[in-house]
Amino acid sequence: MKLDRLHRPSSLVDTASAPTSPAARPGEVRGHGAGKPESVHKAMKYSRFVRLMKLLLPSVALVLVGLVLAWPQIRSQAERLAVSMTGLDPRQASPRTLVNPRFHGVDTKNQPYTLVAATAVEQAGNPDQVALQQPQGDIALETGQWLAVRGDAGLYSKVERTLDLDGNVVLYRDDGFEFHTRTAQVDLTTNNAWGADPVSGQGPDGEIVAGGFEIVDGGRVVVFTGQTHLVLTEGGDIAP
Image (cartoon, rainbow, N blue to C red; front, side, top):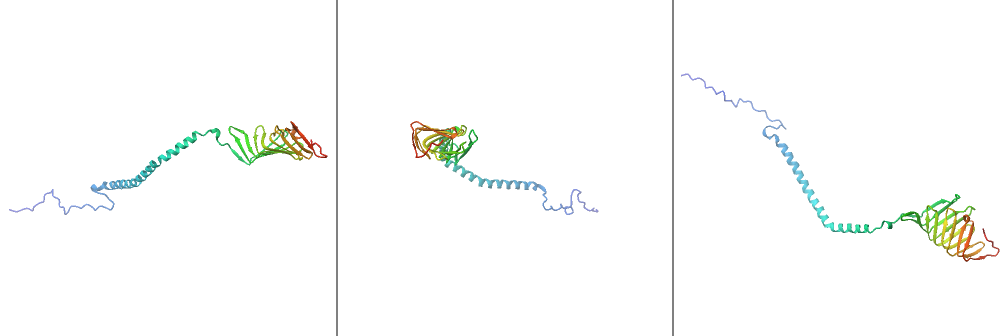
């Protein structure tokens, strides 16, 4: 019996002759490992987040502990401030203070005057009234003369342009007349002045003591009121 060659089943494939898969190129992902890099990336992000929290959480905890420990002192200071603010009367608030102020103006005849002081304090609730320390004023008279006034303290009205002097008041006129009294009122719009306290004065013509005085007619005339005692110097004359 002649034996035919054994034929391989058609279903069998010669593995030796089967084409091999090409090698994976660098950076190319094949098969079931395609999702692995994304998982690694997420794991790295989570790891960085954990490390950051390990640094931040102790710091936050330390700050909270500090606030808890300092809270009694903070509360005490806040309550003390609230009490002081409640007891503060707005009317007692320090008004605006000026150092070495200088006021300028003119009278009804357009003659200038200047008023200076060591300090000036606007009165609370009425900024028109200004309290002055060591005020001094120079007033030009229409006769061409000038009158100077000064005192320990004064109250100046910026609207009415009046000056109330108090304490060691001195009025001096450039023709040599000088008067001393305790209080005086000066109207800077008319250059008139007056006082009801005892006054003593002197000038080229003599000395005078009186119960009060008035400077009228734009400063040209001085009138002494009350009980008056006048001593004239030899050859003296009463100045106008």
